[in-house]
Image (cartoon, rainbow, N blue to C red; front, side, top):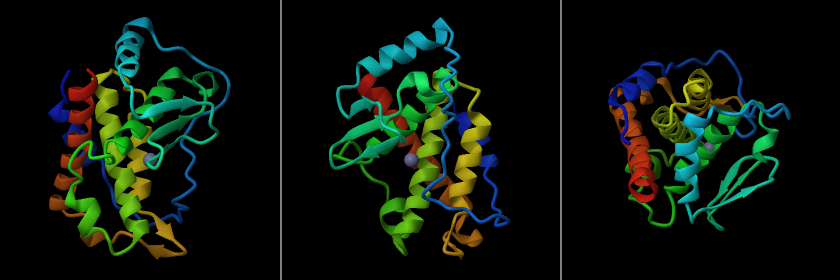
Amino acid sequence: MEINKLKITEIINKIEYRHDEVILPWSFNRCNIGFIQTPLDKERREPIINFIEKIKDPKIINGNHTPTYNNYRDHIYLPKKEYFDNEYDYYHILFHELIHSTRYYNRRKICSLYKTSCTTSEAKAHCFEEAITEIGALLLCDIFKIYEIFDQGIHYINRWLTSKYHEITLIRRSEITQETLDRMSEEAISGVDYLLETYV
Ligand SMILES: [Zn+2]
């Protein structure tokens, strides 16, 4: 299993920069939770289950209301799978939280984009973190043939990059340069590579 380089280009080309809406960056609910589960087809589900079964750490705990990665406990908390409208939504969210987890516990070298260039504020660093993590999640979804969530993921990335906090624009348009996009891609790829090398 490997990353499709064309997919990275496709994701990066979809990154827009708009400030035409006010966004509450901390409370964007992206889960389609509705108790009506449409299962994933067997051919797509099996490789994903095999992958997830190999993950011993971080611990994955199902039953939480909000999907989150807790870096102090090294736990991923997710709503139960049957609470998602579609099974692929569950895996998409799980992949996102797994990419977050690669950034801790020396799992891999944390790139300077997040740790140094973006330290003008924690809020801003968090916006980059979410965007980078979602790029990684979309790459993992592509590897596991979950294509349905692509537009949703792109929307998520764009919303974080255009976040406002108390009416303050967190990331300036001038900061989204080709160099920044390249570094975001590199970080996302490094997270995916870590997971594939460790668990596949
Ligand atoms: Zn996240």
